[in-house]
Image (tube, rainbow over the protein chains, first blue to last red):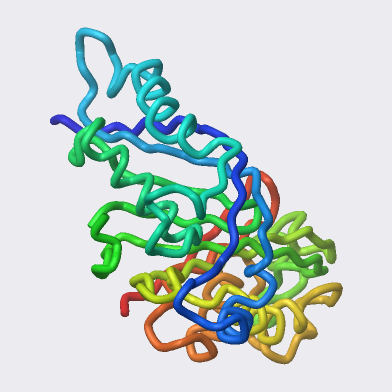
Length: 135
Length: 141
């Protein structure tokens, strides 16, 4: 009997963005995105969930301080107080919450291992979040 | 970044709020039986409810969006929140015949929202009755 356990750690970062597609006219951007075309920002909350079997020696799925270090270096330092539209990751895609969740997964999966990384949840604000469980 | 492909595990959740009165009672039972079955919940009371609507699907590579959240807001406002906010749930025509437990409300809201949203996008409806009670409803696609 070996069940799986899940550990989730929460992170926060503040970032600015706007919804804008360069190839579109001002009118088209306005029609599709409305007031989201205006540069604005959010206090994002990021929940990173790691799953796996419990290491019987340590009693842990993952050392949460290791998780903290990896996510801080890879995601928080990159996006905190940053303009998301200026990040190379969002040069060709709109920094929506959906794309941000996918981008964070793709940044973290190589460092944490896609088998260990269970879910990335990005809260744009307390009323909206996106879950990405991988491809 | 292979984000233009259709990711399978993507879901967006929006959290809404309404306040309403209700009581738990099966109209087929006597007042005494309802009181025994539902205890304090059989008395008229109310809650600050939260409704979580989860939609799933792929990102439109042009817009970066899974769905137009503004459109979801309009649907939920029109079809659910506008009908139940600051009302007694037992008097809401759309909830006729529903015993207004959290799980039954979640199922009733699912049945209202699924046909009002783009086909197949609704993944889950959750009703948070109090900080201690949370109910979710899903149907296979």
